[in-house]
Length: 201
Length: 201
Image (cartoon, rainbow over all chains, first blue to last red; front, side, top):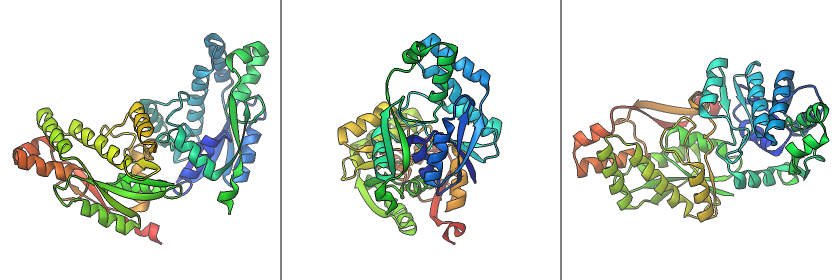
C-alpha cells in the first residue's frame, strides 16, 4: 500500500515515517507555496533516511488567508491549522492509498478532529493515519533519542519545511519583520540530520 | 526500553504489538480476574506471534463494580471502561518503561482522555502509548488483512481475553443468562491465529 506522509524534515514526521515503514510504501511529501526553498531541507533529510520524496504545491490563496489570520490573531495557531488542513487535502488528492502526518498526542496545532479525519477519508477514498497520535512528548523524545540524529536550536537558525519558513517570508513581505516577531516569538526547532550512530550500527 | 502491552489476543492489540516491536521490548500482558481461563487464548496468540507474555491479576471489587454498572446501564460500555482503566493502572504498576493498549481511533470504548493518559504517566513514571490511536477502521482492517491470520465469528464462539468473557461469567453467576444477553447483544468477535501466510513467506 502506498502512503504519502506530509513531511517537514523535523523529528516528529521523521519518526512517523519510521513507525509506518514496515507496513506501507512510504513517500515523504513536503508541501510548498513556492515562496522559499525550505522544502530542500526536507528533501535532504529524506535522502539521509532513505525514503522516497516528493513535493506538492499549495494554493497561494491559502497562504494569504493564513497570513492575515495570524496577523489578526497575533499568534500562528489558526493560520498553521488552515495551511495544514489544506496540505492534507493536497496529499490526499495525490495517488496514495493512505495519507499521514506527524502530529503528536500533545500537539495543540495542527489538530484534526475525528470528524475531519473521516471526511478526508470518505471524500478521497484514502485512509488517514496519524502514527504519533497515541504517543506523548516523553515517548516521542525517548524514541527520537534512540533512533535519530537531531540538531536543535532557535527557530530562525534551524532550517525546516513546516510551513513556518514560508509563512514568515510572506509575513515579512506583506507586513514587516515586527509582524513576524509578534506572530512567531523565539522558540526552539529541531531538524533531523539522519539516523543516530547507535541506530546505524 | 521495556513495554507492557495490555493484550486480548484480538486483532487490534496484536497489530499494536507489531507496530511497536521495532522500538520497544514488547511484553504482552493479559489482565485477568481469575474468573475464567480466557487468558489462555491470549497466551496462545502470544506464542504464535513470538512475543513474551505475562498475566496480571485484577481486583475482584472492580469486577463486581463493573458488573453492577453494566446491569444498571443495560449495556457494557461504562463497565468495560471501568475495568480497562483499572487494568492500565495494573500494567503501569509493573516493571515497564512504557505501557500500551490496542485502542483504535474509532473505538467508543475503552477511551482514555489526554488528561487521564498524562495522569497515568506522571503517577507511574511511564510513557502511555496508544499505537492505533491514529488509525481508523479502514486502515486497521487493511493492515490486519496484510499481516494476521484472523478467525471471525459470533462473540460467544470466539475465545478472547478482552474482559468480556470474564464479565459474562460474572454476570451469569451474580444475575442470570438473561442479564448476559441484555448487556452483551450478539456481536462479532475476532481472534488472531497467527501471522497470515503472505506475511510468513
